[in-house]
Amino acid sequence: MIVKKDCKYALIVPTSMGIRLTPVNRQPVHTSKLFEMHATSAETNVLNVSASLGLPVKALTAFVKDSPIASFIKSELRARNIDYEAMEVIQDGPWGARHQINIADSGFGPRGPRVYNDRAGEAGRLLDISAFDVERIFGADGCGILHISGLVGALSTQTSNFCLELARAAKKHGTLISFDLNYRASFWKGREEELSHIFSEIASISDILIGNEEDFQLALGINGPEAGGKSIAENIEAFKGLIENVKARYPNAKVFATTLREVVSANRHLWGAILNCGNEWFVEEPREIEVLDRIGGGDAFVGGLLYGILKGWSPEKWIQFGWATGALAVTMLTDYASPADESQVWSIYKGNARVVR
Image 1: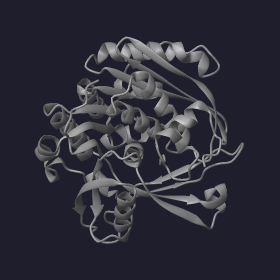
Image 2: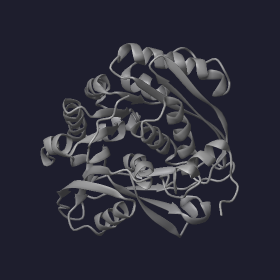
Image 3: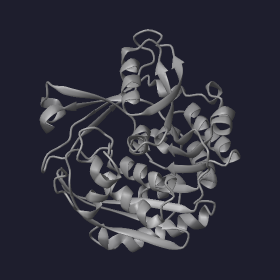
């Protein structure tokens, strides 16, 4: 996997920014009076691993003009070492454009977390390729990897085209393309044929494909072998069979990855991953991790995986680092992993939680 050199940015994502409101003390939403606010999106969650570890990254997004929420998000991105380039959307009154709101508790023990998405009037749905100079972004500036999420790709007809045109421009300039399918049935309702075509085209020019069994089957229409085991670990061979089918359909991609998660309780998960690179398989068997807040673990896995690729490591280290950054993210109340340094991540992978003085 050869990453383009001498680029201004190691990693770029298209994204729709919003805020997350989280009850304090792991309480449920419907009984809480105190909430903490974070700036968030799945795609900047991916960026955060590389940004925390010193690589230059950038978000392509949309902000509501003169909005205090937009100002808050910009400040948060700057604090996280994430550069941004954005189109500005006029609010157009109280019923006009705004940033998405994600209201989510963390769950506790037998009470699973609940997520409430409020995306009406979302400014990110207006993302338009004409507002961005893609020749400068991928040509003059340069980018190692463009990472696209199916969440943004399915927000609207405009964002679908936005992601597709970004992928075409990235391909033209030798930028690697990573595509996390992130299928959501509610986003696809009434647009199945349109989105199937667009997702298939993006997948066909992608170098890295990421998804779970539902993503590959419902977003790309690929059937997999029947899972026969009761646990995630017992179904690893079935997951491998599904990825083999994806490889046959999309031969341009050279890296395929999926996470494995089995929920014991809101605080205890079994966490693993599968990676295929070339003809080699790399498997992190599910092992128990402790969970403070599960949201963002999958994004952090992708962030760690892409960081390993950008650093030129071996595929074995990609999946190990991704497993560990995913495990790190769920120990934090933010949706993203913010590693202090690489050694902290490797300590997590090795199960070494001893104090560092």
